[in-house]
Every structure is written in C-alpha cells, then in structure tokens.
Amino acid sequence: MEKLSHIVVPIHGTPEDDNALYLACMSGKRNKAKVTVLYVVEVKRSLPVDAEMPNEFESGQRLLDQAEEMARKLDCTVSTDMLQARSAGPAIVDEARALQADLIVMGLPYHTQFGAYQLSESANYVLSHAPSRVWLVRDRLDTPEASVR
Image 1 (tube, rainbow, N blue to C red):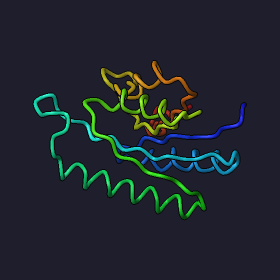
Image 2: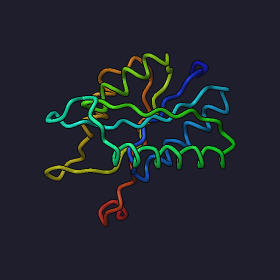
Image 3: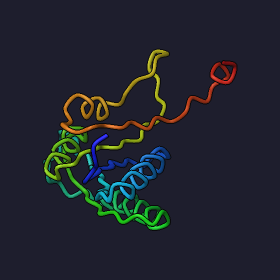
Image 4: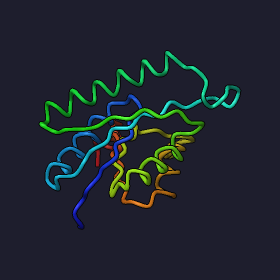
C-alpha cells in the first residue's frame, strides 16, 4: 500500500466512530499522515442551506470534542471540521477532495432493511464517488445466527 499523507474520518455519533478514528489514528501515526475528523450538519430541503441550526452545531461540536479527546489518548493529533450541507455523502467527498485525502475511514452501524444489510445513503455515495481509498468499519453482527457459525 502506498504511503498515506491525509486521512479523513467522518463521524456521526455512533459507537463505530470510535473504531474508525482508532484505525485512522494508528494508520496516521504509522505513515506520519494528517488526520481530519469531519462532522456534517445535514440541512433539510425545507430550510435554506445556510440556516442557523444551533442545536445541531452544538451536538456536532460535542462529537468533535470527544473525537479530539480520544485522539489525544491515542497520542494522535487531529484537526476537526464541521460542514453544513444538504447531504453528508457529497460533502464528505468534496472535503476529502479539497484536502487531497488519500483515505476516508467511515464507521457504519449494522443496519438492515427487509432482512438484508443496507449501506447508508452517505456511505454508498462515498464508496461510489470518492477519489481516494475508503475503509468502512461496520459494527459487528450480534445475532444468535452469527454466533452459531
């Protein structure tokens, strides 16, 4: 694998964010790469894209602060960024492109729809459009069927 210089970690407030940040920090330290933690405030179409959303910004800032604290415990320096957009997927790809990121590391909850695993809309967009490598960190499957195998 080629040397990494910049890693982007989009977070959205799920436990998998910690696993994604851990992998990004370990890879970043090994490669002396920058790590940027990104939070996207998604704005409903009924509002202007630049609408004031203090609750969402406060929640996002809290998540970014928690990510910085976790990174500090891992002896990893990160920068943080918060964006406001209609949809997280295109915002993540655009920001990764602007930062010239070599890697995007995303944590995903285990989500099913109609009995089958379903990627989130954002993850699907990032996988389809990101110019860089993308690592997905999916939550483990905790069902009785999985433990039988």
